[in-house]
Image (cartoon, rainbow, N blue to C red; front, side, top):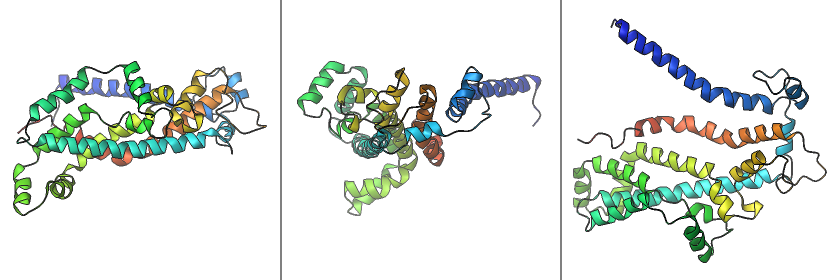
Amino acid sequence: MKLTKGEKAFVSSNYIVLTLLTMIVVLPFWYVISVSVTPYHIFSEKNGLILVPTSFSLEYYKYLLQEGSLIYAAYGNTVRNTAGGVLLALFLTVTASYSLAEKKLPGRRIIMLFFIFTMLFKGGMIPTYITIKQLGLLNTNYVLILVMAFSAFNMIIMKSFFEGIPESLRESASIDGASEFRVLWQIVLPLSKPVIATIGLLYLVVYWNDFFNAMLYVTDWHKAPVQLVLRTIIASSSLPPELLEAAGSTPPPTIGIQMAAIIIVALPMLIIYPFIQKYFEQGMLIGSVKG
């Protein structure tokens, strides 16, 4: 198909814009990688302008990952919080969405209004903190799992997907004697892999990147997630002694440790995302078309 001059100009402008956007995203990340593997004396000689490393060194990574570093405990806390949080959040979201997708549910609209109300109005930081404190959840291993365990927005997206599944499938299963749990587990969920992967990815990113809730509800560094450790390293002009507990080790320059910490924290997401990207792409249009 031959393109007109206007169409060619439109396609060309799209390529230019997308290339610029890609460079805006990629170049800063490449700079972080370059600085993290460049010895500090070369970094100083070039006044920090390093796009291609001319010398290679892993001293910053070795210091961060040496024996006794709190990075290991922080990583374990983050993996535990993320895995437990995603599973709990998906369980709550799936069960709530499946229930509200049933048009015959008594009081369905009123219940939906309660969920929508929480999207528009929040309890506030101080009342939430007081509530968590009174429940005895402060500085516990599971406070960061529970505090973000449900999103009304994600529930509405999943509910829209469930409503698109033919009702005849559920009715035929019910006629054959299947319980609601069996219908959900053996019929609805296998058909809902795109939306589950999409919502699961959203929860995964939220749990992995969270540091603000940790700042509010966790004071013990041995229970802190890795994002809080990264935030403290970047925000501090010098490395806080409580973060790295390797005795007798002289810390290298802070700038290199900051860059290496960014790579260490971001690497798992960079590895995981390509494997679930296809499901995320399938789920982007969930609920956008109603038949």
